[in-house]
Picture 1 (cartoon, rainbow, N blue to C red):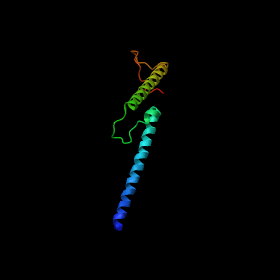
Picture 2 (spheres, rainbow, N blue to C red):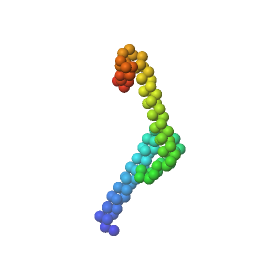
Picture 3 (spheres, helix red, strand yellow):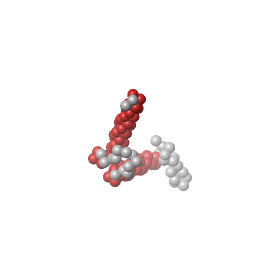
Picture 4 (spheres, rainbow, N blue to C red):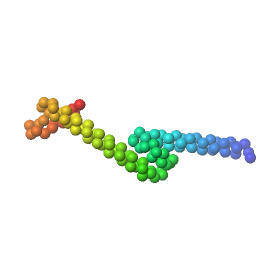
Amino acid sequence: MRLRQVQRMLREEKKRSVRENLDKQRHIQRKAALREKGVSTQNAELLPRYPREATPTPILRDLEKHQEAQKALQQKQLRKKAWKFSKVPGCFSKKGHVVSVLSYG
């Protein structure tokens, strides 16, 4: 083989190696992100290596549970804020409607 051919093969091998390492790191980061969103470690391990592959159902179920829990928490916080606001004098219009819950901290 010629020197140029060998050099080209070595460059291609290095590129492939770097690409594989990046794919591996992204996969690890995606699993960590799933765990932060409430997906169990066991289900996070089911995550396919490449993002274009379909996400397994157990992961989707865990994500849905997390989203429902977040929505319930937001509703609870909004109710608490509304309750606090209702205790402030002058927070209602003449017809008895709440003027603004979101602007009250």
